[in-house]
Image: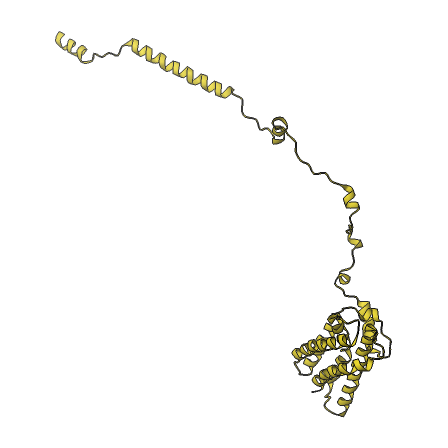
Length: 255
């Protein structure tokens, strides 16, 4: 039995003693104290506070910042219009004056009325474009789709009359002014095309009416040209080429 007890003590014998166990427990307690002190320091450490950028710039930055200065005299002395109430109307900016359009229309409808050269010398294409569209629309109602002929003859006729007037007058005329006058004088031809919608003009009555309309248009156009360009005594010379041009429109309307 003594041999068995000695065998057990030898079998379970090791270098681990109670002193070692106490030392290991002390080491673990020391580690715990260190971990706890670090945690307490971390908790006691102040949290970062958000500081606005303005305070940082005011405290840390040095130098001068450029700030543009406003000059109130610049706006008061400006030549531009500051208020919408003082701006001209939109139609006036576009060059559309209904008063002048009405005066030109009355001048064309009354060949015996003297024309105002200052008004007739304006480049106003609102009325001519409207009369050309009306002429093409009335011809379409009569069963004649002649929009291309109307625009083509208008452009070529204005170019020919413009060249002729520049050769005859010393002051000369702009192409826009010539196109404006010839377009306004197309109004009697629109009345002829309206008559063609309701009745046929291929007869004696239609021929006579077409001649009267051609004379009306050419007389109005020559009167306006002679008044606007100061060509006194040359109205009949101007009326002849105008009559040829309006005769083409009459042929389109009648036939």
